[in-house]
Image (cartoon, rainbow over the protein chains, first blue to last red):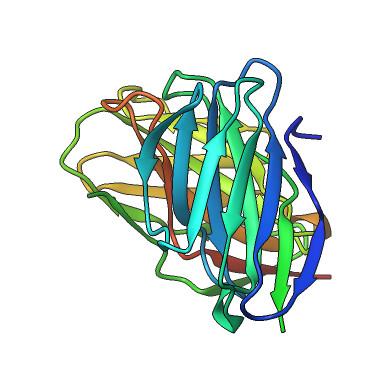
Length: 113
Length: 116
């Protein structure tokens, strides 16, 4: 158990809809990262938050947004969903130190029909 | 920007044998960290091993070890005495030390099959 909790585990929705994915980081971790993994692909970095502030942005679409709340949990909002958004979305958390590994949640499987 | 390349999309090994997975990376930084993660069929991401670039000694974790060649920007993973449970997708990843709290940049992965 990595200590990172993601909900829901599975999500099935229709094109054009909006969904929210939730992540609770490991106790003590201030950084939260969101990654997207499409079928049989590598992990693509979306966005990072540190202690409530956006720290870095990757290949995140304008239809996607995220935030980190004062209790350090994070939410990833996906809107105007398209078939191509179907993927496994991972949240990870880490300590500030660069030698600290990222600890991953079990992911949210999003299926857009 | 840093890039990570895993040139072997698939590898296979016989149970109890040794296999080496390749990884190369490109960076202009001198200090950084390298990681190998394992993703079994459950899709969970599991840390296998980490290496600090300023350390000459190769990291080892039980049956897993790395061959870190900084000048060649190479970071291979050796799995000894392979077990059926080692079957998974393996990802090599880079993390900058110069940027505090920076992201992990992943390679495309190597799918490892372990044959009984």
